[in-house]
Length: 259
Image 1 (cartoon, one colour):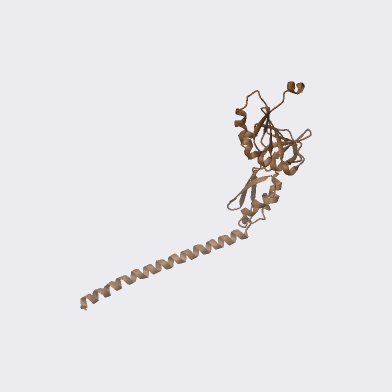
Image 2: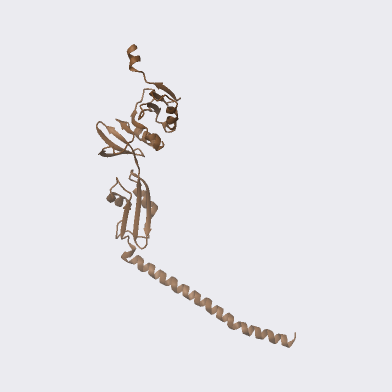
């Protein structure tokens, strides 16, 4: 190997040594800065967790109409100034609140550093239960509220239902109907027979009646507008939907007198 070439290599290595040292120094500095930042973050977290600011200071609840706020706060098991903000399990808290049968859904948000907001959605009132001269709201899940009310909107009225199980099932099926169909219904009666314990009778706002099964009316009643459209506007009667669907006209007083 030529001497000049060897000297050139030695010079190149000597030039690179300071650069390598500088790169190592920069890496060491970055590691030190990262360590210091991590250390201070951990210190701040420890300080945060050891001070009152880590406790929930404010709990707000919205969306409730029938369930008192105090009751929802109790169900949430959140205590202002005591419950740890970071330890709050949102799913578990939502499950606690939904123990109330009037609550349909719960949404919980945590706002740093220590505030919590809860938005609830209650089951909607879709009908009324009439007992004698008294009225009670019926929710979409079949629950009847205990407070007496005056019907405030046009909606189906369940008249004198004593069978709570069948009432709940009927209300839930009613909720599956489009609002446009629900609005056509005036009153609903439970009319079981010895051979069929599932029969219900609907009194419609147009003067017709419908007899159907609790098990199937959610599907069959959807065809009501189309059926009525095929009938003469002056002819009223009962539309049977228990099994096969057919129309039976009301008997006139004149025909009754002729018999």
